[in-house]
Length: 496
Image (cartoon, rainbow, N blue to C red; front, side, top):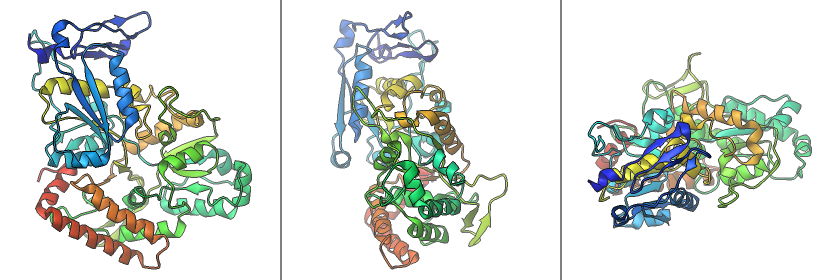
């Protein structure tokens, strides 16, 4: 029998059984509905192990190894590497790679990953269709903005968090504050919290001399993403598809009014230290030390193997999508326009974190690798793997009801609020994506440094962003403009 076909599997979520034949035959224990272990036959044992490379997420590497080992059967090797190793590794002999979404363009450009599709569609009897990735079950934004390259599916998601606004409901009620829906409202709420800082500190049981009682991520590697999150609703007009660069010329657009406005507002209202990361913010919020925070709840997870999160008391908290704007800038008319009543003011920034799973181009068995991706990212297994990482969240509609117990304890009282905020963000009509183009990390580093330095700079926002434009242009020239024009269009889902 063809070994490739012997290694397929089927997954039946409704009865919580995993019938796996990627190198094994496994039964279903109906008494406890847990996957049963089995011993692979001699022919299966003779096959080479499935090789999985995980980039910059040891907790996911450990979880994959653990979940696979529980099934028994085919051999598996899991290697966790750093981002720097990803950039420098020249020989790729792995079957599957798990990586941050923003690196897709680099991996496609270096021909490390291939489109996510199997070569064989039918089973041994030539009538049974083999399992495929159910793309319709993934959230719209995750599928369209992160899993595709051009018009092709290149990866499946283990969950891509978006920035959410978390706040203490008891504090907001005591101060008669409402959750902000626009950045103007956010800045007003922040001013109110600071004006009554003594009262807020007393409610939080913290020292009122603390640097802040609200926080947004401005640490290295995060300031640029926070800036883009604040820019998204201003820059993403319904009549325009691209924001950061011109699709035709790849000229940077950061000196346009929406980005200048966002930077002016960020500099005027920032409360965070330049060391604040989503992880430190989420942890501080879960410990009751903040009244308002921009992060995602799973960022407070620890990566312990046995106890995935620190046990803390439940808090009176709520979560809403990140603020937006009622005005957006139309570059074609060079003017601000007010959104219609039917349009949402919320425009999420996607691709800030998360993990994607792809088949490596040099795998010796495409179908075997594809079947592994199906197994790793289906609703139940994907939840079991991703819940140990602070870089992930739910990725599929089917996981919305399965997420119970996957959040840090402090957020359990607001689990429905968090799921609703995620759902609302994922359903947004418009979105802005973190760049996924080749060498995106260098573009983001230039922007990140400028945003962090701008907090204490006397230079105008326009001058600061012009320096970023200049740096981006020099980088583009060194890489090759036409390559970046093509990659940018494909990253936006456009085939040039």
